[in-house]
Length: 201
Image (tube, rainbow, N blue to C red; front, side):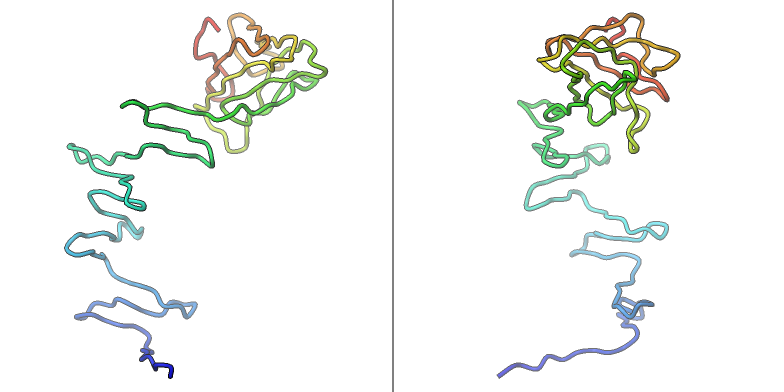
């Protein structure tokens, strides 16, 4: 025997004069209220037409992810934070460790350029021959403030990163040579150019 369940059919439903459920323009049921409480805690509310979450802390599977500090500011709280499958931030012995994941390789083309694919990049060259890098093409989702760390592939005979104001977008006081993966150069995107984080290279 299958039990018969009761159902309601109306354009809107009110609780003490407040419209809580209604039928939207697509015919689907929608929830409508200025705020929603769990117990006596206001969990959801409308902020200038946008739904906002309001609580002291937020958990995922029992792990506290967001909380308020003593000043009332929201802080992120977790042992590790991942972007895709890469641990970008990790709690390590009371401190924070930043991880960029394995390097992304790109070959320097005939114009002395590579594409910005990640913040950890390994430079390769045609036939592992020496090459000069003068330009890092921006990614479509890149922005001012991006950071890239460059190193040469271990098989490469050497990569020179140089300042070519006419054709490139890397600004260095002196050229930097990266050989065999034993030296790295960190650059910061500043508008339309890349500048060294350490001026000495």
